[in-house]
Each structure stands twice: as structure tokens, then as C-alpha cells.
Amino acid sequence: MRTDYAVIGGGLAGMAVAYHLARDGGADVVVLEQGEVNAAASGNNSGSFHAQIPVEPFLNQGEDWARRFAPTLRLMMAGIARWHELPGELDAPGMEVTAKGGIMVARHPAELDMLRRKSAIERSEGLDTRLLDRDELRSLAPYLAEDAIGGAFCPIEGKANPLTATFAFARAAVAQGVRIRSHMAATGMQRDGDGWLVATAGGTLRARRVVNCAGASAGEVAAWVGVDLPIEAHPIQVTVTERVAPLIPHLVYSAADRLSLKQTRQGSIIIGGGWPARLHPASGRPVVSMESLVPNLRLAMAAVPAVARLRVVRSWAAIVNGTQDWRPILGEIPGAAGVFLCFFPWMGFTAGPHVARLVAKVALGRSPEAAREIAAFAPGAA
Ligand SMILES: Cc1cc2nc3c(=O)[nH]c(=O)nc-3n(C[C@H](O)[C@H](O)[C@H](O)COP(=O)(O)OP(=O)(O)OC[C@H]3O[C@@H](n4cnc5c(N)ncnc54)[C@H](O)[C@@H]3O)c2cc1C
Image (cartoon, rainbow, N blue to C red; front, side, top):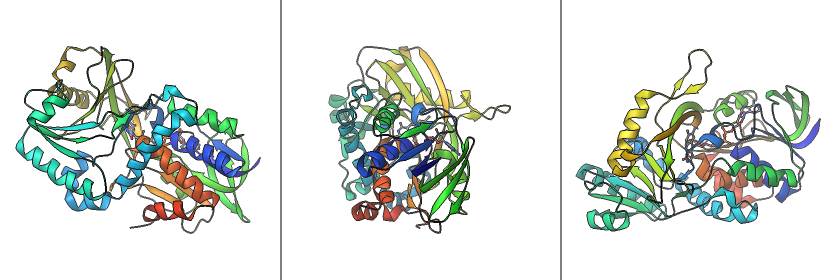
């Protein structure tokens, strides 16, 4: 089999890259997916659009970390703007793109102080985050607990439906001629003249260019071309409640610990925030951890007391792609001309459609602007 571009991975990144390579560059594209499309992180996440600096690394790694991370916020802001274009462009109203804003809720003065310091860094990158006092918070979000003393509000934050988004890209990509090969793992790669030979479970694929969109496995794929990247895989979990009448329009966070909470268009409350799951000792698959479930739900009830009345319907676990510094890795791999990486850790649902378009433009070799936008995130960049 031959193609212009082999895309490894059929998650949000891979499908969006494939769509743009074909639509914007008229390229012949084959997507190799070892399992099913959208069956990994992209289809199992919480569907939040994050723009604020996350609390956990800010508390653990401090303000120097936050300043180094801060340029990433521009990709997240552009990512959210891109999401609003997608339902129309892909003819996919089922993506359920909504942005009513996100609130990080503080219950203690030290938390408010942390939000003040964090928000100053966010604003320096052009992100609109506003500190709210108790009265402002109550009038914006009367469903929050009475002991909330203030918060940080970011108007662009919101959500979309992870069960539909990647498939919308996949349908649009196929309409552009992209060939998707599910249950066909890439197993190795070697240079072949000015292109690459990709070994797959179904034979060898010759490609002029390769885009590595393998999510949590992107480090293993990069190792095939001799590059060691600091890519991590972490099992984390999410919980969903029964449906209730509209109650929570915002994305809600806690300034104290890991919490994200929002209500879907169907009425369920999705509770996450990145609490660790376990790996099943026999299968190695991610499974829900009770040690995480209880504190995660406790935080949710502390932020929004009405959640305590609801029945939990399901909790699930999946592997998130991570890096220690939370920065994405985007662009051509040094020493492996023609191999590109599209990797956005922890919050790759938010930024995925935007960074995929940038990486596709760079892989097509037609956009110096896109190359400049991702230069700071190049593989191997400090
Ligand atoms: C529980 C959970 C909650 C999350 N919540 C949010 C959130 O609310 N907001 C947010 O912005 N982000 C969130 N994320 C992160 C986000 O889901 C991911 O960063 C994003 O989906 C990564 O997309 P991807 O396409 O790069 O990776 P994936 O969706 O993991 O796709 C990678 C694909 O590559 C395939 N693959 C790997 N190796 C090979 C190979 N050798 N050959 C062929 N195929 C291969 C895999 O099978 C997989 O399908 C969450 C993640 C998890 C797990």
C-alpha cells in the first residue's frame, strides 16, 4: 500500500490531522488505528474546554512552572475558538459545542490568593479571567455552595460531546478521500529514500510523510525513529450522574484540588478533574479506583451541594496522554525528516482541533505562519 501521508492513531488528533491534510492539501491519506476510532482518550474524556491554568500543577510545580506553561494558553484559546466553527464546517450539530464560562471556586482566603496570582499570569497571555467576590459569585452561580467566598471566572470555557466529535472529523475526512484502517496497528518504521516504510499488522505502507497522533503511545512510536520524548500515560477516571433539569450552565472547578464538573445537554452531571484510576493487574486495562472516586465526589458535593441528591450512573477510566511540564509537543521530529508529531497532553480535547490543523499545515509545508505558531513546542525544544 502507498500513500502521501500515513497518520498513526485514530483519535481526535489523528482524525483532525487527516481531515486537514486531505481538505487543505488535497493529499492522499491513510489513518492507521490499532483498535477502534475514538476508543481511547478522545472518546472517554470529560469534554471540557479548559483555558485557565490547571490548579494541580500550579500548586505542585509553582509559578515558575506556570510562566513556562503559559504560552500553551494561546493554543487552548485558539482551540476553543476553533471548536465553535466545527459544527457548521463539519455539519455536526451533535458536537454540542457550548461555552458559558468556567468558574474556579475558592472556599478559603489562601485559595483566592492563589487564584489572584494564577489569573495575573493568565491575563499576561491575553486570557480573560476575572476574580469574583462572594456576591458576584452568588449572582452568577447561585447553585454553588454558600461557603464559597469567591472565584475566578473565564468566559470562554465550556464543553463539547467527546462521543461525537472525533466521528464528525472522521466522516468529513472520509468524504475527502481519507482511508481509515481500524484494527491495523503500526508496528515499526524505517526510512525508505525520501519517505518512510511503516510496518503494519496488514503489511507495509509506504508513505512520503508520517504524522504520529498516537496519544499516550506517541513516545513509543517516536522511539522507532530514534527519538526519546518525555511522553507519559496515566490512567484517570470520570463519573456521570443521572439526568436532572438544567442546573449548572458553567464548567465548575475547585481551587483546592482536582475537580471539573459540568452538566451535559442531556442533563447528566459529568464529574472529573484528573483523579488517578488503576491498571487492572491481569489485563493491564484502566479501571476505576474507589480511593479516587470518593474524594472526587466529595469535592463535587462541596462545590455544588445539589449533586449530593443525585444517583451516580457510571464511572469509567481511560489513559490520558501526559507530560511532566504539561506543554504540548508539535511539529517535525529532528533527525527524522518527514515525521511529524501532534501531541497535546492532559487537555488535548480542548486544543486538539486547532493544533491538528497547525501540524497538518506544517506537514503540508505550506504555512510559515503555522510553523511559527508551533515553533516553541517543537520536539526537543526546551
Ligand atoms: C478520562 C479523561 C478525561 C479527560 N478530560 C479532558 C477534558 O475534559 N478536556 C480536555 O481538553 N482533555 C481531556 N482529556 C485529555 C484528552 O482526552 C486527550 O488529551 C486527547 O483526547 C488526546 O487525543 P489523541 O488523539 O492525541 O489521543 P487518543 O485519543 O488517545 O488517540 C490515540 C490513538 O492512537 C492509537 N494508537 C496508538 N498507538 C498506535 C499504533 N502503534 N498504531 C495504530 N494506532 C495506534 C490508539 O489506539 C488511539 O486510538 C481527558 C482524558 C481522559 C483519559
